[in-house]
Length: 133
Image (cartoon, rainbow, N blue to C red; front, top):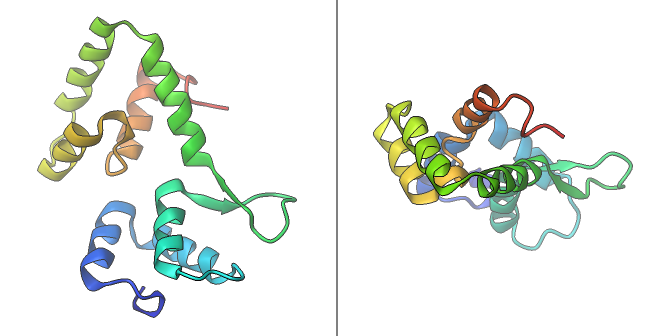
């Protein structure tokens, strides 16, 4: 990450949030792109929006499976009644042990990147297949 210009502090944050393997994939993705003027910003966007090379889109045009899942999640939550939404949040929060993960969910709700896997698992348990394509 230093080669891309990422500060030590930001690198540690991303490693804690996304994991080393995921970051390595995104660094390779950014390195394979032409005309990237600000690698750190592009890497941040690739991590945030989970850029992946699109099939048949030529030169790795970014698509975001994560963005699609988040849109489906947002729509799913919006269809639930306020009482259901409140119960869903309380139930999910009861499953979070790590203080950092709890704080991230309190700040970002269902869009919490730190809890992305746990959120996916939660909704798969609650409503199997609801977030699938």
